[in-house]
Amino acid sequence: MRPFGDALQSDMVGMAKELVALVEEFEGEIRAGHVPPAFAERLVELRQTAGRLIKP
Amino acid sequence: MPFAAALRQSLQDRDREAPAEFIRGDSLEEVLNRHLRTVEQMGGDDVFTCILLLCPDGKRLTYGAAPTVPASYCRASESIEIGPRAGSCAAAVYLGRPVYSVDIEKDPVWGDFRDLALLHGFRSCWSTPIRNSEDTIIGTFAILHRTVGMPTHEELEAIELITAHVADAIMWFCDPHYFMERETHRPRLPRLSLVSDNQVGRGPAARLLALARQFELKAGDLDRCAAECEAEATAQDLRSAADLSRKLVADIMAQIERIRWLESR
Image (cartoon, rainbow over all chains, first blue to last red; front, side):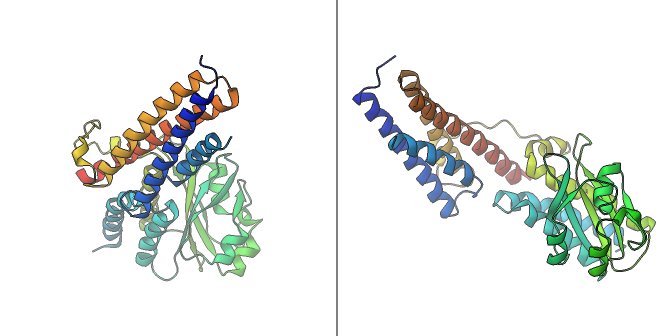
């Protein structure tokens, strides 16, 4: 197991930011009416979890 | 066209419309309200319909739809405990069979809600349990009238028909897979296969699929990161994010199946 060093921290934060960007892309598709608005709750949950990783 | 045939036709039309309504994001209440308005328009001025849904604990009923029942009545009976004296619907679930209250003023079934019903001018109520595919009660369909009386044979047939269509709508909302499998006269859909990236942007299903693939990849990355992380709280958040991503993918795939099934109709 890798120590929880700066490199891993940086990886993790980057990954979480990518996840938030993905969530935002999805939300954008919903707002634009391209996909049905049926996933809002799950997206909020995901954004919150990713947010904890960005700002522990 | 005779009433029964016209009602059947109208409800079949609603069956065709409801999946598209769910897919575009309409709530169960909105869809059921349209079912009930269809019924009320055909039933005349003295027909007030409502659907009550059984709470997950199986002990109470709450309103699923009641398009023309006065809001003050619904508010005052918002959460009804299952039992033999809390109105026709609570009794129908309690007894596991239809309960036709011919005269609310005299029926002991209405012990707890008699004054409320009479205050709003309701004099009779015919309630029937709604059952899912496993024959479990999931709610009730009721017709309230401002006059006393028993349902006629034709009305009983109509109630049975309406209840079946309402049950279909609720089950579609809860589990579209059941509904798809039930439609045996229609060709079964092939399992979903991945489409190529050049289909992105052509429609909701392709857009959703593209997003699903990205979340699936991200879930794998998050899991790998969690496995390497020594800080337990952070690792847990990483695993949670991976898990949520996969659940989102599962939700997306189910939605895609709904869309494709609808497109195939």
